[in-house]
Length: 246
Image (cartoon, rainbow, N blue to C red; front, side):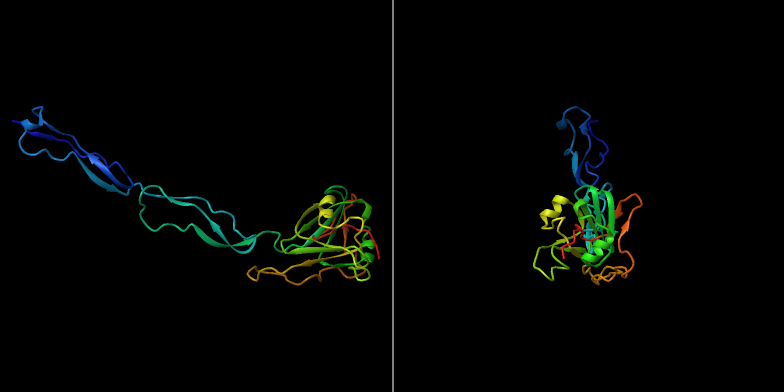
C-alpha cells in the first residue's frame, strides 16, 4: 500500500527564543502524488528557553573614591529572550580609598623622590618653624601631598604674606617635581611659610574629619620627621620649599 512515511520532529533550531523544527515526510511510492491525502507539514515554528541565560560582567570600581558613588556591570541576554527578572546593571556604592582620611605632605631634597625627606601634618608653619625643621631650600627637589581632602598653600613673603604682598600657590593631592611646583606658581627657593589643611569631605563618609589644621604638634616638639639616612618624609600636604624670607 502507498502511504506517507513521517519522521520525528527535530530539536528546535533555537534553544533561546523562537526557532523552527523539521521532520522528514516522504511517500513510500516515490512520488508524492502516488500517496493518498494531503502531505503533512514537514516544518513548524517552535520556541525554547532552555538556553536563555544572562551574561553578567564584573562590577566596575566605585565612581567615587570617597563617599557615595555608582558601580556598573554589563548584563546581556544570551539570546532573544531570557527567563526571569533582568539583573541590575548598576548599584550604589561607597568609596573608601585609603587616602580618604589621610592628610600629609612630604618634601624631598637631592634626587627627586629619593633623598633627604621631611614630613608635615595639617597645620600652619611659619618661617621660624621651617628653619627649625632644618629644610634646605636650595636643595628641594620634589614634593608629595597625600589625601583626597587635603590641600597645602605656600607663601612667598614673611609669614603667610602678611607683611608684603607676594605669590601664593595651592597644591592638592599629587606628586610634584621642581618644574611642577614652578608651573603652580611656587618657586622652591622662595617659600617662607605654608599651611596644610583638611578640606571638607562628604558627610556620607564615616569618620569624616572636616576641621582645618589643628593637628600640628605643639611648639617645642619637632613637627617634622627625618630619616636616619638623611631622608625625611614630609607628611602630606602641599610642601614646596623651604627658604626663609621674612
